[in-house]
Image (cartoon, rainbow, N blue to C red):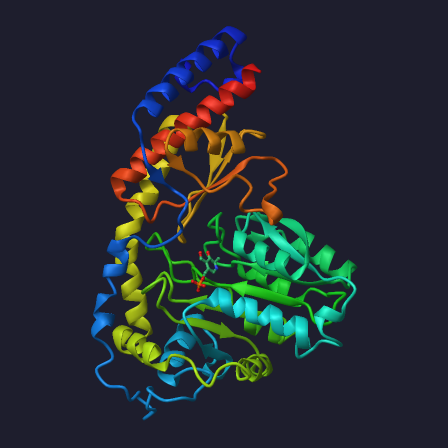
Length: 427
Ligand code: PLP
């Protein structure tokens, strides 16, 4: 083993002191560069948005394939032409799918609001009338899921997110034992931020497990369903069929959108569930809307042409972003590999890399990076209330910066990881 790859934990105090001095010098050089880089934003690069610019000249006619004049009011559930396409992609029946506005996160907030005010199709009373409502949160997870729960005053209990999805044993134990536990979040495919893909077995367990709350909900946020980084495309578990077969048809509510397929600000969002859930959702939606932006839906239907059109389009995204993920992994491996100071995910899809540094150093790494001009997502962001109990996890988002900026930012991040580790081990 060369000296440079010997784990830090095996080095003598003198060797560690020398290592710390070297990292301090490297960090001083880094700061002198006056960088201004940003790895916080899980959003598409402009070159990805350019892939969809044909949308700007569509639709060619305002009448959809079923003769609906999309310029007018009506059709709360969205235009059939686009719902058929995404029903095929999401492996659900068209009747089980709603096409809505530009944000699936808004749909999630609407669903929680409806549960809170009215209760679900299988609820005894509105959730807002319960003494306490608790949600199971796989961690690390998506920060906005957690802030949404906070906003409702919903308590959280965390379970580990494994490579094959949430720890199903832990989820089943919690859900069976406490009637205040009304639901769970899951990003089933290429999870934010770990890249985990929920296996059919884990999904089956979640769909069929006994729950103390009769109206337990799985909020299945399939935001990255088609966002593959390799040719081996993961297939999402078929949660609606699994739940239906287990006698719990109203348990899952599925969300997806084209935010990272076409335009992040002007795409189309989708909700799927049992036919009763879809009626429940649209009946509430109808209190505040007479119909969605069907013109934008038609524009998308024309642009893709078919479900295969969506798949082909996603290959173009992959060609742009896969090299950025490869660069992140190359730099992490070359600079941190073997030192025993970090582990990281190697996602095969999605938008993030999840980096675990030495316990107790994540916040320090983020602060060091900030001082050197590199913005990282705040440490702890992937945990409820922003509190990572181990102060270990950092979410990296390499899609938005240019390839050169990804390289510069990752070299800086690894310098900060090494300095923070050296500081800790010599303290
Ligand atoms: N769900 C997850 C897991 C996300 O990572 C994001 C965006 O980062 C969203 C939902 C937002 O989706 P939308 O743009 O459809 O509101």
